[in-house]
Image (cartoon, rainbow, N blue to C red; front, side, top):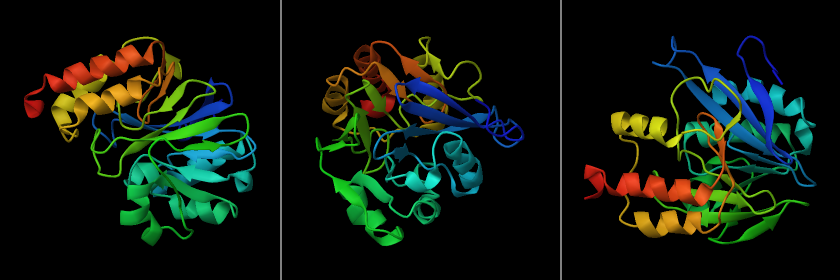
Length: 248
C-alpha cells in the first residue's frame, strides 16, 4: 500500500501482524539509492521497531496512521543508538502518550535514559515482552554490526528477527517487500565498500545465538525483508564476516 506518492513511502505486511514501512531515498540524494525501513507490530501493545531519521518522521507517521491510530503505540524499539534507528524517538513519544522507548540495558544506560523524553523499558539479554498475541525477546549483540549497545528483537510467534543493519542492501528496495532471493551478496558488496561492521571478537557466538532462534523472516532495516531458512543465512553471513581481513 502506497502511503505517500511524493516520497514513495509504502506499507506491506511481511509476517502475520507485522508491517514493513519503507521509504526509498533516490540516487540524487544517496549514491546508488538507499531505503529506510521501520517495522510495525500490531497487537494489544503495538510496537514500532526503528523510528527512521528525524526528517522522515512525517512520512513514517503517515504510514503508521494508515494501519492503526498513532496514539495507540505502546513501544518504540530499536537496535542501537543511531539516527535511522531512533532519530525521531521523542517525536514518537509526543505523538503516542502511552509509548515508552524499548531497548537493551546498555542503550538505556549510555544514551536513552538521558536523551529520551520518557524513561525507557530496558530489556536484559533473553528477556521477553508479551505484546498480546506476539511475544518479542531481546537478544544482546554488541558490535554486530556496530555499537556496544546493539541488539535485536525476535518475535517467536511469527519467527521474525528484527535484524536492524544486518543484511543492509543498497538501492531503493525495488521489488516485493519480502524476497526469498539473494540478499547476502548485495549486502556483502555494500559492506566491503563501506566497512561499517566493527569486527567483534565474539562474532561466532553472537551469530550462533541469533541462528539458534531459527528465524523464518529477517526484517532488514535497509532493503527487502527476507523469508526462508534464517539460521542458514545468518551462519553464511558469519562465515563471510569471519573470512574478511578485519576478522583475521
